[in-house]
Length: 252
Image 1: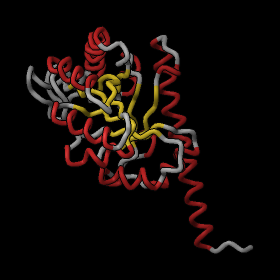
Image 2 (image 1 turned 90 degrees about the vertical axis):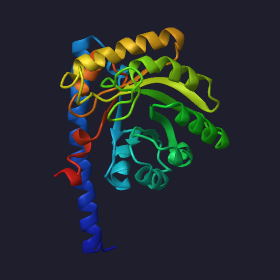
Image 3 (image 1 turned 90 degrees about the horizontal axis):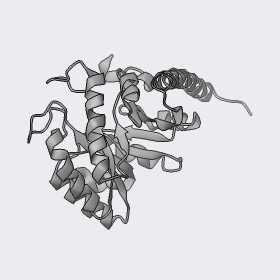
């Protein structure tokens, strides 16, 4: 059977993109492995979560073919249709962006983990939606290391002093599971420009959290530019987008 020029072109494009993603993944894997080795950690202790925002479902399929199982999005408007389009794949979806309560019902339909829980109202909304959907959603308290006591961070999250109460609320909420903590290296405050120090501080908060909630062992920290520091500090999950998928179209 003859293949049309269009089909051949599409196939070549997919093959080229697949090779690009494979090479990028290999580089990221080497970075993680090197950081683990330097820190005396096993590579298996760190989970790579690939953030696919702005990229199509086709890239998610290519990544799945390369062995990626953990993927993330930060906007429900993009995540929901992408998760639906790849529902046949063995993927675990992570929601990593700031979450509005009016998007919660949609998010709990596909997300296995929500990394950005930062207020009691969101806990209540997530619990109600997860219970209605008969799902259990793993949740992380987002810690804002640029926030003063009682405040929220510029990029979401709660100040360290608010973590215990929010964690207790999550642990007690039906349909939710307290998995641990997440942070984004701050752009302001005492830890600005010091990702390693920020991640070390997160690990201190995590250690105290585990005294009360021993199962809350997940520490989500580090992105393309600072994943090495996060792994060295002890992160269990790194959220990597650009280093795997390339510079996003809107940022070129």
